[in-house]
Image 1 (cartoon, rainbow, N blue to C red):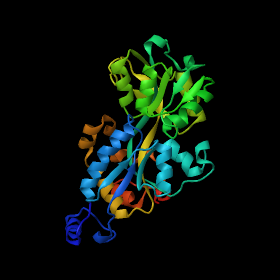
Image 2: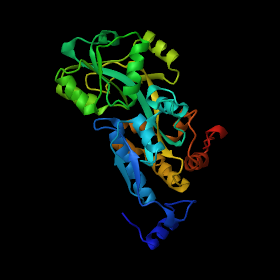
Image 3: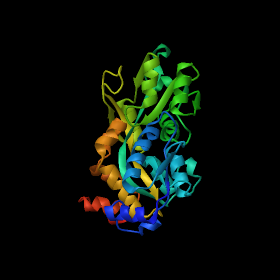
Image 4: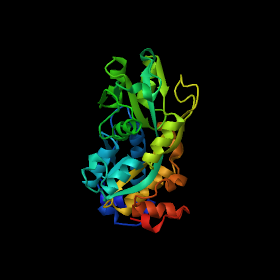
Length: 323
């Protein structure tokens, strides 16, 4: 999509492109890294990309990726302008920790707005008899894309809990659901905003068991991985889930490369933060996409465009988080 100088000037006057580079310097387009089909990032990303595109008058296309880790790599290397990640993965990236980073520090990424909590939970077919994490010993467990949050964390969690599974399988959310139904894996473990579409798909086709961690397991995981926090999957999230399930989670944030113009990021953040009802229509996890949750980020520097928006709204951004 190409704008004439006159149209770009009109956009600037209307306030779509706020203080910053001249309208004529606005990018012709932006790209947002999302995740695989069947995941919440894939759905949620489409929604906020559309909302932001309309507001800043710059088209934002989405790119299917393997999830948070992959989004960080793509954003760091400018293969995409925008991405989404869980903060546990972002912490590994910033410090160059975790096997997937290979010791590299990814420090060109910047936080732009809070998304929602990612909660870890499990699904298996009722006929398997698997109703707990300890029963996964010796079993085949699908964890989604290798570079996603569950692909990164679930193997570490199982190891921390002393549960030795038979094998770990990777693939898209939809692929994992198909493999579960076909008996190619015994369990599908994932972490996502609620409800997770692939889990709803599994429940619609099969009799399933949903489960998470015990209190003792939660305590062990939080001690070994301090970025995890208490979370609850409410009853009714899935049709057959009749009781609240305690678990752990990590918050998600949208990110941008530090070189994306501040006025563009400001416009994106403003559009997303001020259109929550529309976001929620796209996916219910967006009910947590609120300015107040900006405090969920305690280490990743915010993009200057994001700092401007949140401080205008009365949220104090710590000096060490102004990037």
